[in-house]
Amino acid sequence: MKRIKLIEESKQWVEDGIISQEQRDQIINRYEEKDQLSLIFFFSALLIGLACLTFVAANWQMIPDTFRMIIIISFLIGFYGIGELFHRREHYTYSVFCYVVALAIFGSGIFLTGQMYHYSMNNVFAFIVWGIAAYLLYLSRPHTFILFTGLVIVSVGQIYGLINMHDFDWLLFGIFMVGYGAIVFIKKQSSIAWLFAIAYMVQLIGYSLEHIDDYYWLMIFGLVLYVIGTYVKDYNISRPFQSVSLTFMFVLTIIQSFIYDFAYARDEFSSHFMFYIILTILLGLAIYLTLKNEHRYKLYQLVLFFPVFILVEIASFLAYVVLFLFSVSKILEGYHEIDRRTVRLGTGAFLVSTFIVYLQLAWDFLDKSLFFLVGGIILFLIGFFLERHRKEFVSQKREDV
Image 1 (cartoon, helix red, strand yellow):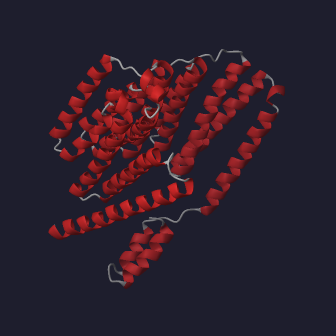
Image 2 (tube, rainbow, N blue to C red):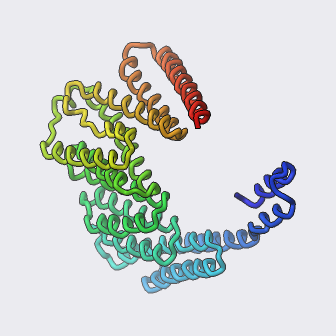
Image 3 (tube, helix red, strand yellow):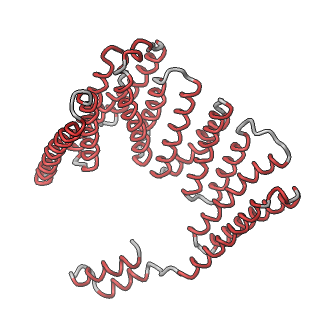
């Protein structure tokens, strides 16, 4: 809680008799007032630095190579040194910002040096070095934003390689999985697990689109992430891994409901038998781990990994069924665990599923204004019913407890 907010709230606590005035003073004194002048000087120095960088960039071609290197190294050491100074004075927000700027200068310096000496950039080697530097910086200064920067560097490097060289770099992916992945399981912080899971899916989506002709292998990659999340008992890791996997599969199922609505997509589709073997093994493992952890209600959400194209002629219909079953399973899970957040997610998924089905069925038959009016009324009634039922259920559960 911020100091100003704490002062306002604690005054009411004293009036209500929750705490005494002496206790209020002791609590407030624990929150040191921030030095606003240091913030002003910090941004002043930042703007001056940006002005210098802008001037250098505008006149870059006129500067000799030796002076270019001196400028790059000077800015790199300067920002890192300022960050170190802030870190020692325990101004961690400022120090992290300076470290990230230094890291950005390091990365841009790699590309500028390559340009100066005509080094070929037809690979992701620069991103490998940059990603390792970010990883080492995080090990010395373990701040989440530095790790986030490293994950962005590695992911962007992978996408850069896929777009420009049409190649997926396994060394870069190995650094991501082994180096950054180890941090996830060592730190066991929810924010880090979220960032890692999202970066994992982004990279493998790019790999699938570029190197695998059949999109359905994405289901395997998503299921692997889900199985890992189910195996790990730490909630800070399991929840992000499972949530990212399920969110991706929910979106993919929606896309499939549109794709297989067209006859040419159904006629041209074919699947490899190895896909079904791997999918069966992973699903069996996910079911076993879910039952072992006594999460019976979470078992039903695995329906998202059902391959709707197994009966390609009715794939769109099966996609609708999968969406509704998943939505209902999340609502039931929320009711069972008395978790409002899960109930809200299930309700939202149910409304989205209803809208998708309504969009597919009624778009070609109703007048557009009537289409939106009827759709809005239907969604409102469903949402009203679900919200009312949720409140009644939660109230009843609380009374029972």
